[in-house]
Image (cartoon, rainbow, N blue to C red; front, side, top):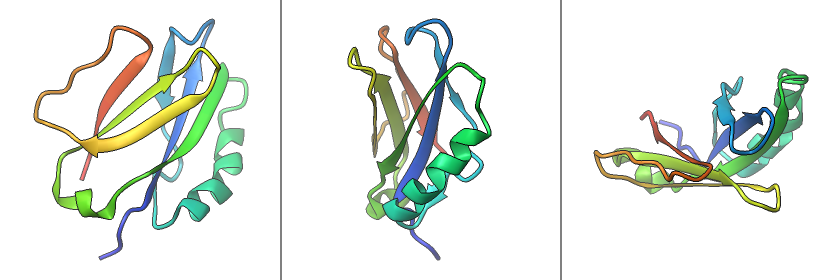
Length: 106
């Protein structure tokens, strides 16, 4: 069984960073951060012209495989996409600011 060390996250915003959504990455999980970072520029090309694009590779602790993981992301006032994967609970909530929370399927 391969382990997951990174997730690719691509977000598109239209108008402002208050109106953003995740886009489906062609490849979403990677065994290394280097693999994710290498493929990211190619993946972004598929979404050219679909609003302001933000992207990142997110570190995943392989020990979380047995847990319910939650991907949380936000685009800061500085225009930087920040994301993390943490162990979540069964309840999924979101911040009223530009932050989205998504349960990562196992």
